[in-house]
Amino acid sequence: MQKTVHTIAELRARIATWKRAGERVAFVPTMGNLHRGHIQLVERARALAPRTVASIFVNPMQFGASEDYAGYPRTLEEDGRRLEAVGLDLLFAPKLAEVYPRPLANMTQVTVPELAEVLCGISRPAHFSGVTTVVAKLFNMVQPDLAVFGEKDWQQLVVIRRMAADLDLPVEIVGVPTVREPDGLALSSRNGYLSAEERAVAPALHATLRATAERLRMGERDCAVLETAAKTRLEAAGFRPDYVEIRCSDTLRRPTSADVDLRIFAAAWLGRARLIDNLAVALA
Image (cartoon, rainbow, N blue to C red; front, side):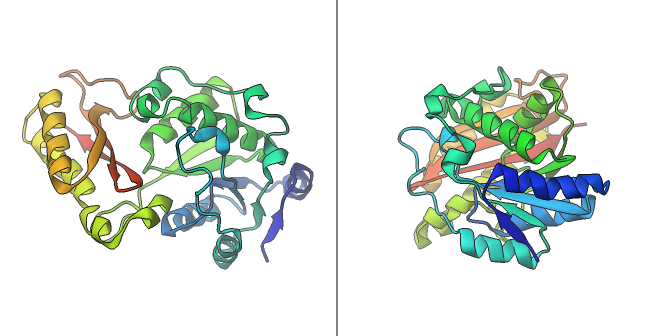
């Protein structure tokens, strides 16, 4: 039966018993309001290690001043039931003061230059420092052998891998492919913000990425032209595009003609929901 703990001391005491027994620990950090994508991360974690821990913590440090921190859905009881149903061993659900005992402005922060300064890092300049700070803290609290993240936020995955490597954190970072609805929409906790009419439009985001990928595979290489066309298509569908950009998959730099491992990234507003997606494109 899954146990829920709220303090670092309780968390470490439980994990210490597993470590003494030589058991590997897999960790899935979340902000709650769980969907099938999150559950798939836990299932992947359970396949990789005999002990699994998930966290639920809505992290204020990664929200901008005008973003939805206050209104972000908090569904701890339902989330706990879903995690117990898939066999999670331990849920860590700390209070704000447990993670940040001082005002946020006075807390030590972890930043990842370069990778966190493009794509979502432009329109959300404090976001990734909030993500890397809380993930570094959670890694220190849980001390997992591996941690599992979804590939829907590919930039986040790349940033966290760089952080773990640069700080010599002994945590293997595992990516899990994006889980989608049958119509292609990537699962997201913020999909609940969509009205019925907006939900009908939302799959156009992934369809636009697929169309752009096909043009790349057919030989078009002018990224600026392809990006402009994709944004125009999104606007025509009813989105307010934040960006559509073609980048190298692992470095996030602008591609040259010699690069073949690419990824198309997009972020766009639909009503009050900011949706993100990405699509890998391997060129011969």
